[in-house]
Image 1 (cartoon, rainbow, N blue to C red):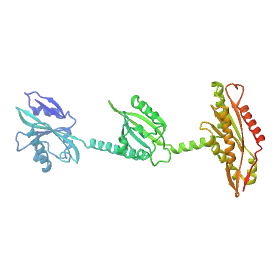
Image 2 (image 1 turned 90 degrees about the vertical axis):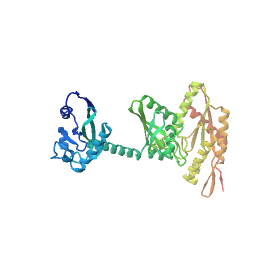
Image 3 (image 1 turned 45 degrees about the horizontal axis):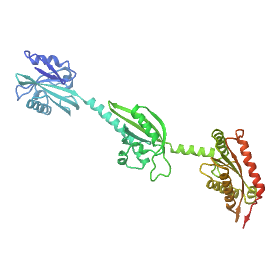
Length: 438
């Protein structure tokens, strides 16, 4: 003979009284246990409780007797209906309910009713009661925590997504969807690397692959988000990636993105201030000198030929004195525009003094350098600004000096001096004067 106690099957000797053995087992289990004699289908009799069940029942409950005599009418009917269901099925049944019928207060309980057979007849029902109120409370608390966590992630002021190891997003929060200006449904159908600017995508994809496959963690990778139709500037983000393992074969990558666009803008402005002339937007003297030093090194090492063009405006002091500094600034800006549009994209164009400009042309011939110098002189001669009702024109003189790998004893200062000297020779020869046209 076997019975189930707290879900475990217990073997009983068939030649012993089941009730006697069951009573000895009842006090060893960690659940409330009671035994019901069901030999009379009209009168179910409770024949005993264990100690834990006694503590669960309301104070003053009788220990033995008919269910109708021990329990009040409603709890008695409640229990008898469940016992009858076990008798009809002949199987152990469990009921999980919120009730105050079997305990002193309203509780979440699990009631388990197991039939005890003798000679193929059910003679007793063993009931076990587990109070689940604390378990339910803990589960509810955990569910509340999960909900609060989900809400915090959903409305976080940074972009967040969970990504499976194949690169498909499992979750995307509102901020990330806002940055990308796309609906969540569209984003969930894309690979997460599509969220990143195409120029930064390879770096992002490589990092994501290393995290997904090797568990590596990446911190503060700086990338741009994919451009949107409404964005006027790039959105720069700092990306953190880490792998989460939730079990064997179950893992995903958390990708967190913080907006660093303002910082990037400030950095770009600092670089511009450190490297560009504030008036013309051309490179400053420091950038010119660094570029020339590198060009000379390349020339010496690889035998590359280049040229330095030195540009000085004619009678610029007269423009400032006669028409004011605003007119002079306008002339300088015009010259900057002329140089930018005349020279090649790879040339370094700089303002190195008040009215002095210089250009580094790498990989060029002397013929091309001279032609560019002539174009610059012609273009500046035709550049005009309006001041005090007058149209002001200002000319320029351009000097050219070539350098190549053979000039191993030529340093940067001597190259600049040579270009400057060539410029003064041209200035003396042309004697170009400022012309004012009414």
